[in-house]
Length: 557
Image 1: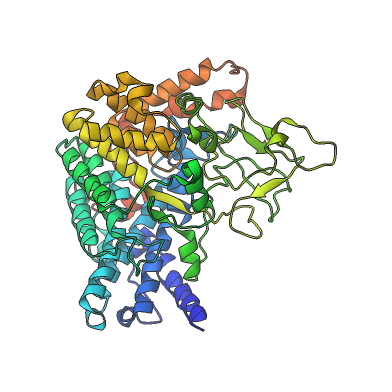
Image 2: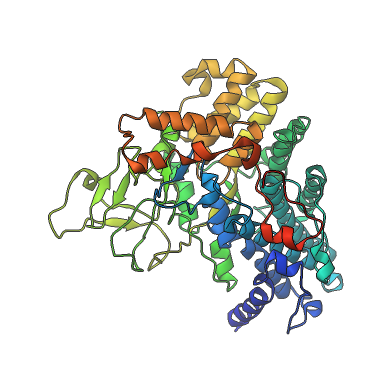
């Protein structure tokens, strides 16, 4: 009975709130048939409302595929591999202000902001003990801060409403400066860090925001401010301090299970198992489904290991494999790095039922393996061609009985403990060079991957601030590839253009590259089309500029 009630109310909440776009909620008075003003007065109602906010981040436009895969492509990690179209426009740097991805990301993030504002305003304080009231408000402020962190990182100066939409006049909002937006982000994350539960609290519900995640995402915000385009370098010290809080807390740690902790940790995302020690915050499709919300992404489908058997029917772990691993990423892994074989699968399942090795880095099936839906049941089959009519066995990794051909149930990491360690190392390095502590944190990440300490493997990397920074640039790619972080990392370092140039040179230098191969030439598009003067932030959506009398389009768009 309770489950049905939650599903019913959740459906009403999603229909009532989430069907509106940014333009709609800035241009229309919210309407409801079930009384918004009276809704936020019980724990169940509060949880339903918060689930509605979480579901915006699980949408197609944000972590379902738009932001996490399509818009994040076009870096030195990987690129769109369909030569016959330019559907992944932002990853190819072919987008305009009328682009659907530019518009939908903006709209969904502002829906999240508006729902957070509404929750903060309307939660009935008299219905809760003060500690619980503050905790619920902290969760909404955490989600608002995360939405604004994504908005300011991807669009720059943006409007910053801090109250819910009331009428049509709310459509006309001038942008706030990046510094002001980050100030609000820090205020919200600070409040969240003071009032949210810790991940090891018995009352904590996995899949939701927690205390140390707020500190960690604050550190990420400070690093963004410290780098381009703001270059407020004093923020490196503030980022380091936030990372230190998480480290000193003592609960969070790297997964080192059985010497294959990296693989084990990502299997947890694939199988909807919460590893709260390493995963500080993730987009939890599993949690939303428990709340009665039908939330699924395309993680591991459009950016996974190719699976072409089954004619595109449900019941198979289909993977369209639209993203290729860059040979530049391949080249920065050492052979003994356990992350290489996990992140770069090097195999496929053909339409004839053959588990086949893929060793050519320019093959269309040379795809990411991090969020794989399946793997061979017998690894020996990689080098054995089956008899006619025989299909080779595979193991379904997803925690579903019958996979959907288009959607997956795989959770998506937003913040992991290894990021805390490497952010600390980066921030510390800027202020004092490669300190013993910074080196030790890098070594922890390397050791988990089966590698020697950096001072043994590459002594030159710890001899100067510049050398250590270069090592961290590569280490972040090895550790976090395909987790939606690389493009913003490269932008804040001022390296996106340089890495795309190097990537194209690497592609051209591959022994298998052929100038007559249209697929190979298509891999060069991101590097050829990228323009540093335009592409380090997105334009404002054309529809928003048309509706908002105070929003002027950026130069060049």
